[in-house]
Image (cartoon, rainbow, N blue to C red; front, side):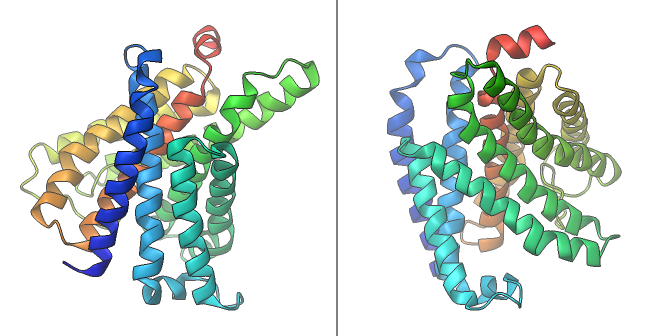
Length: 295
């Protein structure tokens, strides 16, 4: 097994065990589908730790992604990798989790502005560049949603309430815009992997692959509209999160089981799981009563 894949499995296993122990203590407080919300934090943390490990085991391939005008590429790769792993543990066990999530959100947003957006603008007709940039934006939105949710529900002062309402729109837009784009891409190109429409065809041996891609595309579009107009946001985020989770189990898990030591298959699996976690974090951040009354 390649060292990259080995440490990805090690980090995923450790975070899964640590996070699962923490979540089991929280599940009795939730009812019905709300129990799934807690796993959004776990999915997000596991994937963050996995990608953090890659910064140490695949440094040579990641370093060139750092813009040329930034010095000490290797240093920044190691620093970001360490930060991802620390943030993953923090979010999983809820120790300084809001601070960690806020820093993760800022990190992904910086990635969009410094790395993804320049490349996208240089290749405006390449839809995969847009998919990558919007992926980072969605992950940033999920992290910000988690960072904002605890203190937003405690706010009572009118001035702070207005500020909270304005800030709460940021994660919805950060997830809503990519959802719309991804949904349209699924309808136009259903042969590509669903969830995040990257440059990989869904294997033909996956049953119902085209139908599932169309289904995911429709859900993405509907959820994206709900996020942008602020209607039924909690229900939309929950439905979309569960849909992406279904995609992980139906498409990406069989792909990984077919090639368990393939780093590319591992990256696709955890990348989509991270997207799922970000959406569930957004869903969990939505106040139940507010989400229902506004609808």
